[in-house]
Amino acid sequence: MIGSYLWNLIIGGLSGLLAFAFAFTNANTFLTSLTRGMISFAVMFLLTFLFRWLLALIIQDTQEDDLDKAQKASPGAKIDLQTPEQDIELADILNTSPAQADEKQAFEPFQPPRLKRVDKSGEQAVPDPALAAKAVRRLTED
Image 1 (cartoon, rainbow, N blue to C red):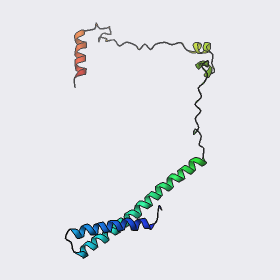
Image 2 (image 1 turned 180 degrees about the horizontal axis):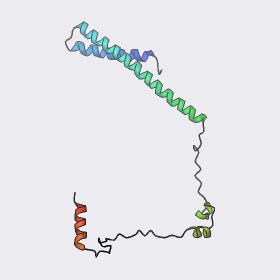
Image 3 (image 1 turned 60 degrees about the vertical axis):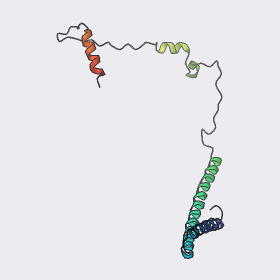
Image 4 (image 1 turned 30 degrees about the vertical axis):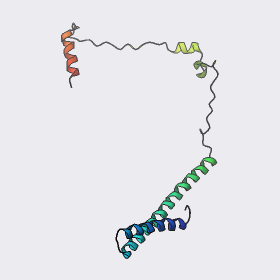
């Protein structure tokens, strides 16, 4: 734990004296004021004890984490920020020559098949602008 019981006594005593003083100045009897002061002392004594205990747990955990990090050098903890030379190309990195890369596959843009409206008879129907406008109106409805 952090500190000693002296902290509990000091904080509890100060809160007990303040509670006694405030209770006595508000026209309470001596016994009522003393009771309120003792209750305040006990509550603050226990709260200070709880606070010191939690603080000790937090500090102990962080110290253990620091020790673990210092003892273990995990992979990836050290980062090498060197960049490769400018003359290395992607083909060199992939262990292929530029000629082999061109032979593998030439670029072809994607050309999806076009949709066509077909009549019941199987012939391609003539596009109707009124039908297209009707479809657009129907799709935009909420």
